[in-house]
Amino acid sequence: QVRLVESGGGVVQTGGSLRLSCAVSESISSFNVMDWYRQAPGKQFRRFVAAIADNGNTNYADSVTGRFTITRDKAKNTVYLQMNSLKPEDSGTYLCRGSRPGRDSWGQGTQVTVSS
Image (cartoon, rainbow, N blue to C red; front, side, top):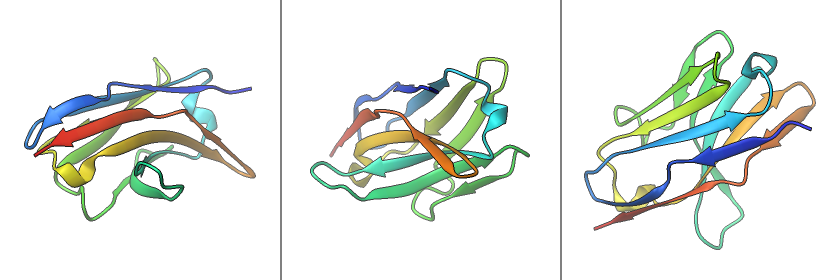
């Protein structure tokens, strides 16, 4: 069973930066899309943040466009989310998802807290 493990979260002040990582236990080329979602404390809803397709195309939520960048390293089977100019509303648990036909795989998440 594939495993996704997120890391890189922490506490940062408004305007700061963090780089999240999502390490995958198998080739990320086996996924059509790798993406990041944010979940607010106590909420079940997961808000889309950014995605990278197997062909390299990227997509971002409007709220993070120009501040966040999603990249990948296929040799390391790892997806990254560089987050700059962080705002308090960016706080939450960031989860990585790997999507392929008929099956999605999720990590456990990494916590990001942006203090004002």
